[in-house]
Image 1: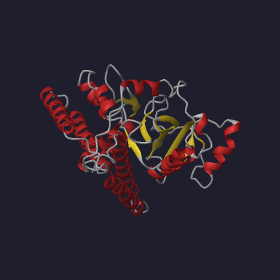
Image 2: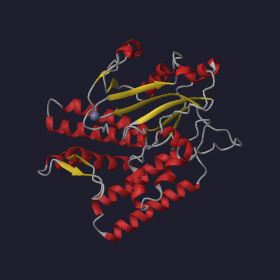
Image 3: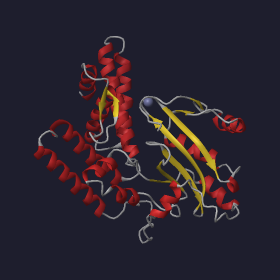
Image 4: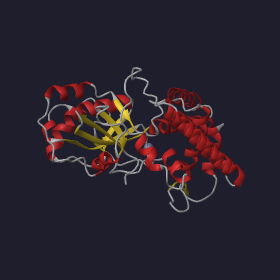
Length: 343
Ligand SMILES: [Zn+2]
């Protein structure tokens, strides 16, 4: 139903781009993408943000599209669009960290429920107001619960939240020349071995932006910092990129000292992933951190074809040939698809 409705709206006459932001902060996207995002939020709510079910449903819809392709091309397109919507919804859950954290899942469901209400009934002030109020209450209730550090045994101290000055230091380019202890080879090896264990901090967009807007721009910082764990707590972290809007950064710390970072972005609609500017601090180079991080990303986002945005510097060519061997896409240069922003 969502797939076929979405296609109908996409094909309606109208402007080439729609504004999915606000009047003050417009964010224009191609109209087909705007409709798909809207319907994907409906799908996300109906699936209660269940990431595994969304991906499974995407696969089923894709298969159904294949079965119908010969006898009914239009029906096949509807199923194919349904698959896209499931995929997009799964990506939204991922972006919010809901595939790893149940509270994050419930936040993104609550936010999308509000957004879909606003899309259909938001022109009615009373509805808009009560929906926004309900969302704020739901988010407050989720926040009032103890943090869902489910892998942490009971009785262990709750991890410290990352401090604002740490974030600023990260934003300033990760550099802190004042302290450069010699690399601890054993610690680095341990880090390489646990590259799959990542503390996840949600995207800035979607529900962050929503909360930011609803709260009159007061709550953004609080939500942002509350969800970002300390580097001491987890050796690997996954946070919104400071350099590229909508991109993420996967980074590693050795005993609290920054060691490695790479920016990445994925598009499940196109089955593509991009990595950009892997950077290893001098004393941690040639320890396999970059290789381990890229392997962990491929495992986290299975089935994608991997690329880089820019070309490779000559001295980096052997590195990319090494890590790209046997990898779909081979980390070859590729322009971004229309679904992602590179700014
Ligand atoms: Zn794409």
